[in-house]
Image (cartoon, rainbow, N blue to C red; front, side, top):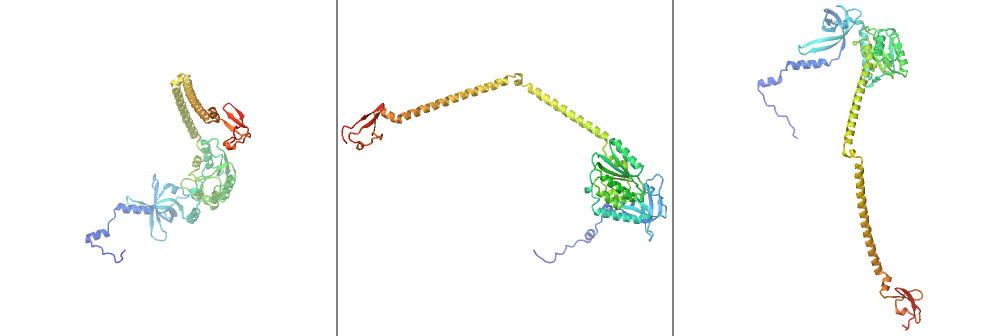
Length: 418
């Protein structure tokens, strides 16, 4: 590898150099990049003074101009009419408010719009900041993670319900649960759901229900209310009590737009008490309908199986072997007779060969036997003690010798001396 200064770039015409250095972007590219950047921004609370508020009858959105109280700067904000209606006192021009908004960029028109989601009077600004800090703390501990949430049982043995005294939330949960599953059983604890005793009452009821073995799910229900009314359900002590419960907890606080911290740590967040009822028990009619459908499919499958087996049985019975029941026995009988005959012939041949071999061995034994030699005229001469005479020098004069021939034996003395 060589080192040294890089080669000098080739010169370009002046027009080419200008085009390369300042290549223009299409409008759509710039708009999309701006839109992507703004979409990544998180919602935040902004404090200011309303200097103009436009809300027309029949329009779902209102438009206000929010001005900084220290410098001459303002923002145009769009906000749903429902968010304005949720305030105890409608905001007027000149009022100081905090608005939960998120920037939105309309790429087609190239305009930046501030879309508000909630609005509060300025007195709650510091409180919102503390809640946001607590929210980030709980999130950093992993308490909002989906992996730690417990699944709800398919059909709880007993449902724990924490609600206010004689409230619409209690009626909504009980009525809708029993409409879906009439045999459902409840353990209801009526406590204060608004005011300074809310946290202690709800936490105590939660601990009591969590200790009951038959309670398989606990619902904390409350109807809608102002931001201040729902503050107890963002209390850190109550939130951590829900986290430590061994029984799955369903949060059914307020309306869809209300999101106390309890919603983030609960095992299931229901938008309303009615919605909670639809999530904790199945619909009996739907289950019965599904059971009937399953039984119908099982009946049809069984009927098809029986029909198929009958068809196969009929096809088997139609075979020739089944028309004459004795044919299969006759076939096996013929096989047995043929096998027996082949075995008999094989055994007979084997015996004949062995007899011939035995006869040959007998002839061979007779040919090599001493008896056969004697029958040819030879004799065996023995001493008196039974020893065979093999040499004439072994014979003593006048010794009585025993001579064996083919048919008998006799004694003899030598007539001459050796």
